[in-house]
Length: 359
Ligand code: IPM
Ligand code: MG
Image (cartoon, rainbow, N blue to C red):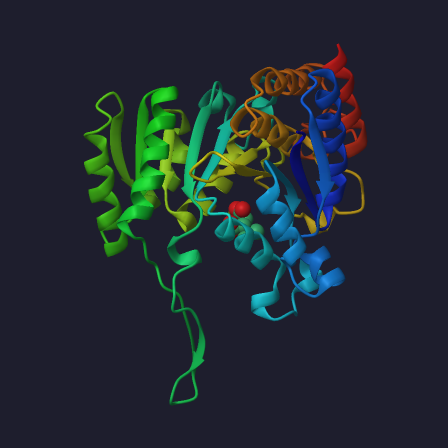
């Protein structure tokens, strides 16, 4: 039976980058005889426009039935005025939650060809290869109670709840330890245990898990220091594990070390390795419709999907090599072009990856 891939292009640059990623996916599907069947769905703003809700039932049902999901990006100013619970981001968060995609892998890998595009000096980032493991279905993103209320004196107050259960910390911890075993064997757990009780518990559980993984060297760092270390000496890290909000912030910072957030793919996995794959960047409304967005993060997300959810490492590698080859050829979208380099369009970059696949 054909394996089903649900494609959710999303908003603004979402459809532009997805068009290129789908071409690449279809090409490897043929070439490696993967037997994948692709279907499209609505999520986020496009779903609000068409169905009045950011996560339509049909999308959720298709997502549950799919072997893997490929997502572009959702959200943007067009929906700024819709009610909070109907915002495009709710669609994405709802999908993560409904499918229990708790394990978010965000690799920050520097392609040597892009060392000059990094916001840090080339020697600080040469060879950079770190993996941020972000908890994705808990923490302050989902904690209850939450809201904006009016106090007796008429003043409004916003509130959220930062909460993690032991079981939630354990499962992301196990995932991170196992990934560290497969990589450099070093895991840094990021918390704010000097202030926040939630993360006192987080640190305690990570320590406890560490005993089950004697081959992994576990360390701890406060999140403010981790942010500083990421821009001071990022190569000290192998795998970082942290909660939902800290992971959101640190992964954007880590992305820039690699030249552009336009290069970074991500995987969001459930306990069985089923997952959703998306670029780490957002829907970039400022450049939408111009055909200049970088499709490589989405194309590399296809590679992650093939590796982690579809057990097709050869196809994944073919895509990664094709990406490396187009960078060797000097092709750059605007976000990764340095002085004197002519920027290519989204479609030209996609076409170059396709051609490199056949090379
Ligand atoms: C991300 C994004 C999302 C998040 C937004 C779009 C809800 O920033 O995937 O990092 O905060 O998780
Ligand atoms: Mg983010």
